[in-house]
Image (cartoon, rainbow, N blue to C red; front, side, top):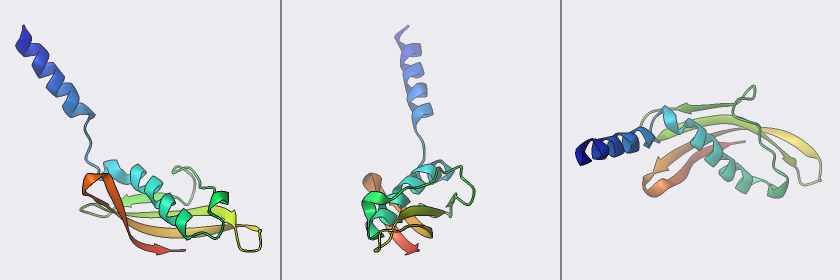
Length: 106
């Protein structure tokens, strides 16, 4: 009886795993791109990002562990006015759960 329970446990654990370096990582890439964009803003505390399902927002797996995110951020500029800025971020997943910014265009 112990063997079927062990097989079930291994099967359930395997079902819970995901490969970040595939389409499974697109949402995580979108979230991580927000960190890099926030760091580039004049008033980072004012940043507001859309949901990944919003119009004009995409996160695409480009092969290997590289993703391209296209979205926008609403934030205050240097004069305190709220503006919407479109961005494109190429981010790469590296070992140990870390993400690296490859390119950012705002």
